[in-house]
Image (cartoon, rainbow, N blue to C red):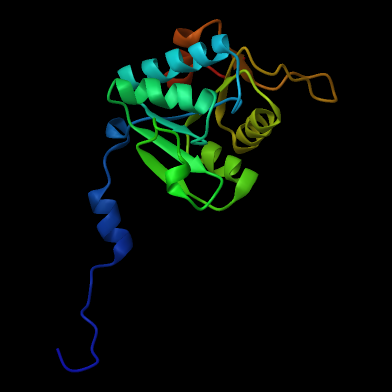
Length: 185
């Protein structure tokens, strides 16, 4: 090549497509959402959910902070699971100790969109206003939402949004991962 000539690279989109895994090999990404400050019972439930996601080889996505996020991430990591924390600030070191892959966004509360958009399904545990916002975003994006001791919603017309209510952590994880589940009911 002469001076100033760029080396021709393969088209990035074709290269990427050739390297992609079949859908059957891609690990499920499940967002675990819940309050940053929670009581012991709620934290225990979050830990159970995190552990079961790790046992099922799902990637746990959360906001990377304390409370439910930390309990779920810590339990998943203790079992060798992959955890991703979508942080509100610019400092990756602010992630809780259970986060393997911190993503510093600098988006503040707007990072809730990234948490939910990064997931195939969402498990909402307990909840404060941030959890409620993530549930709403998940519903708007068409993500499956599984509720575990969380908000019960009703639309102004009286209809109930499609939040699957789970009795315990096992059922929540099963509902989040079940590709065969009929959601038309």
